[in-house]
Image (cartoon, rainbow, N blue to C red):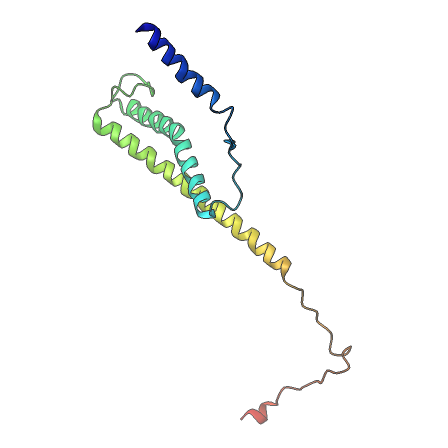
Length: 156
């Protein structure tokens, strides 16, 4: 029974190891194309990365500030911002919600700044694409006719 089990195990492993060697189709993924994802999804992904990436730093900063305020008020005897076990549930929820709010604010700020930069770049590109207007002075154009404005007496 043990030999049969060993034989079956080796047989299964040999199929799993040799299968990729004799595979007809390529399993190598192709790199993403620039136009494969819409710009809105790229912006949303950037917002997510910045918001969640700033969370540990903002959480630490909020914890330091809150611990410092408690120490300054005399509510705690020592200043230890890394000790969150001394906080009750409401204080911990407050710190987490404050940190999340600040992180979302950082993400939104980055999103707005990026949109302004893209808008300015597009405006600049549009102005470059427009043809410049050629102004010919009246004296240099032989086909031009000078039209005088009406007199104030004629308007009444």
